[in-house]
Image (tube, rainbow, N blue to C red; front, side, top):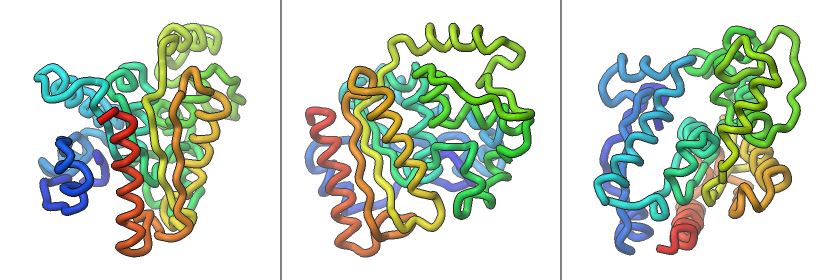
Length: 266
């Protein structure tokens, strides 16, 4: 999860057991910076301009699992929802992270960090992420806005220069031409892991538009060559949890685990 001082701790889940573990799968819970597992300092370590730390932690855990023989790239998947969906979006749009996972599930995610604060409950999260309407904040927010990284850094789609903002994600002071050449080298071999996006029409916290526009860009702009498997499921009920009752919860997780079984040739 890696955010809001929320601790991810081991817990019993019949759904995980029936849907994944009984099939021989393994579940790993990642305690990454930004969460609350090791106190307030652990949370503060990935706030605002330090957000990249939680993405780096996930990559390090993936590398350790592969190196130790627990799994392989082809059989490793990443699941995250809400702030965890932002995490997934950032991992798959980074050249290192995209090569570490065979599949990903991105649930009720934040993905457009330029507009998040103007949608639903987004304004209440600016202490965690920053304010995109402040030029100094947008400089670092731009670097972990998956929608912008995908379209402009990876795909090279031109980006309108907004007044008082800098569009370079990490190299402030370079020309746009320099940035484009660097991105072209960096993302030349980028390929999106097989991915499922899930959201809810009735989400009252994270607008479903985040997931919708990301899927649209992957399918229509990246295309099959760079994003060969992009699946999308939107429940018309359910709020931020993505499901309104137990039957919908069961359906959502059935879709998720069946996707992973097929995506990973499990």
